[in-house]
Image (cartoon, rainbow, N blue to C red; front, side):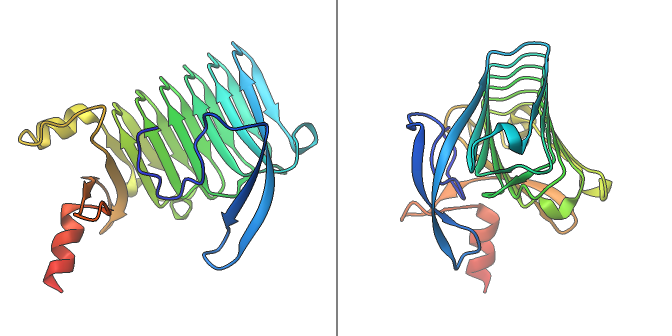
Length: 220
């Protein structure tokens, strides 16, 4: 992923089967956890149930190159993180807990993620036609995107907060920026009762922010 890792604790590539991870679960308590990768790969036209009884403790779940599948993360599951890579026309229902409250999608097309638990951060890289369907708006905080087209976010309990993110639209709105699918990154959040998507800029110390936040800080 090319995205700035606001809450990402490690990348999906190059991990050994077991990883010792320092995890901040509340901005105060840091725990040392031993996590295990669980990969579901190359499946087609299947319904895949991921339940606690069939998973290792503290799994990092990766769905990779699945097509026309329905994947259900059961209510009793407590995963560390959820990664979706190279999947096409697949539905992912997240009913269990994701401890980092983070999901990443990379090179996915036509994927729908139905989220019924806290998923504060979503990162998408080189995706198209993805749907993020939240049961509760309170479970969402931010969506980070790079090279993303036709992304739809919906919130069942607050449809007025629904919105879309599309690089083509953003290019039309910011014609002077020369926006790149490979390098430019965006952050979408609820601001003043609506979904707002902003270009991420970096300060001289490489700190990521937005032009609006820079202006707000300067005005104080």
